[in-house]
Length: 296
Image (cartoon, rainbow, N blue to C red):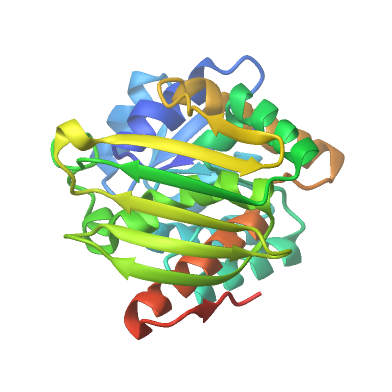
């Protein structure tokens, strides 16, 4: 499948473009960016054209891989879907529920395949962990990701600074808790220091989980843990976040399979929309101080 990459920022240059260039079956055919000079330079590095016109790139590809801020991703993804191009999206798929619903409607109308690159979901260990969780039927869980954004390669990301860890890190944790414990129906939330957020999730069927995320902890406090529990004990997931390139290649394979078969990925845009719905409920809970229902 012929891919174009939309974006020239750190995530595009470090993950999307090199992973597609090295993929054994996908073909990287071009790069587009808001800065034409950056698009041409990134394309030249991988011996493909750098496009200044996004529609020109859409005309020569089967799929697009989008490495752009969520608010920029939505209109370009809708445009690509209308052109019949399959979509490899970044999380969160949008920064509000209305935009996420718009994206779902556009992809359904176009009949294109979609995959959202929730990094942890495309690790081999996660698949085994979810299979074990399905057999043991856990009744609860907990997940946390504490991070020091300052000094990282994406520290200059405006949307991450504005929306904080709730919108950047919580989607990763939700991407594994939802399939393990079931859809979330309600959220309670409390704010910690700076951008730290604590969530209590009520899942369909009665399971409950807690989530804590932060981009503003001291570097020595950074770390992540994920587990679910039930009668069979505690199942701990250790994310393999140093193998992002392999995970991205697996996401490319999943999109290709969905496009060829006409089926749907478990991490498609509908699942991405459900994650946004939980984040939306969390924001409302932070503002109201009350338990808020998730819009289904």
